[in-house]
Image 1 (cartoon, rainbow, N blue to C red):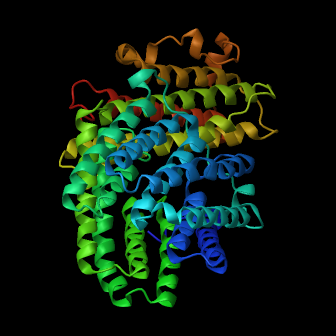
Image 2 (image 1 turned 135 degrees about the horizontal axis):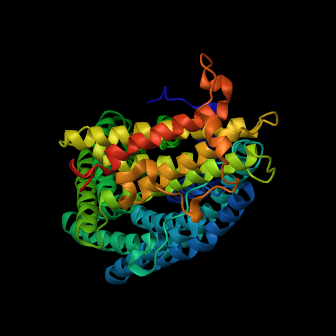
Image 3 (image 1 turned 45 degrees about the vertical axis):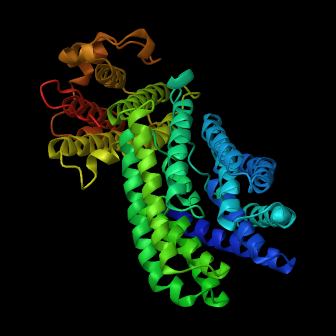
Length: 521
């Protein structure tokens, strides 16, 4: 996992920056004479600012960072004021959950602000903060955000050279059909269940169940994704508690070694977040144990209680996605695959126009968008290719779909690169090849068109902007000189042929009515 490819060492640089930002935030709080609970709050605020802010531009990231205290400090104040009123406190937190998840409809900024608001409520429960502590907690958050912003937007601004990939626009919808609305209702119901059951397990550490449920609902879109994420959360927690027993308990809060290990955990959280949710949870769990040691409340029974509350939170998430506005893995996966195929069509169309001499056409943006969409497809299909999935036929078909979509992405990238070459020339056969690719895409997206994949007419709404091929162009397509590879004849034509073959091969695993359904989770 730690040997996974890291182009440009972006993940390494972001992880080291996080250690520097969190360390600077805690150091500033300690230098200002703030108590230990305030320093913990500041460190968490800096971690969240560096972890959750993911706008596609540096300017957008700066604006979101400025908005974090606008959202977070009122929630922090509300949580401390309501500390002595359990019913009002619980109701307020559920409203924060509802609003925080719904805010994801506004993209990365809404997601970051929603997470920050939730975690400000969470940290008051973690520290059992009371109103008298509010001034120092707010001061710590302000110092932390200044420190995190200074590190992020100063000389260590990784995003200036390597901007983060743009998140795909959520599927459209209204009311409960809108993904963010549906998930807001699901998350609120799940957190209510976790809160109620968690408090029966422990009237002091129940908030871990709510926190588990919240984070399980981050970056999931279907029942299967949520179940897999809950399972991985439990696995990471079990491993983290085992490590905490071996490391955090013996240290018993010794400041120097604990601070060093917390820095290692911060690095691990950021370095593994994009690779493995279980490993990220492992580092979060170990860090929580170390912080409990610093606060002087750590003992083996507390770590065991943490595991119990995690199971309660995961159960709440599983129950909610099963009975509250459920969305199957099939529906979610199909929606993302449809969008990926539409992106293939757009890239092919733009490439054809560019090769025909249209300087305004650019296949690079849809090619980049395709990579993001395929990432979402992989997440959606993850429950089917999970090692514990007993349905081997469906697992094999899901893997075949991913292989073919990856092949499509490779051909699209290569086609975009050829089209970007100023020396590339238009070939009369390109138009016909592009139309066949679009016909294949249309057939995959239109079930009634499947029986006649090779003969479906291309509708006006999906036809390329290039002129229709003349009979001579169609005839020319078959006149490739014998003995010369197609890639030498015209690279773009070769990529289009390979793309057409990959799309045709997708028809079987995606749409075969005779075989078992690909997904029914």
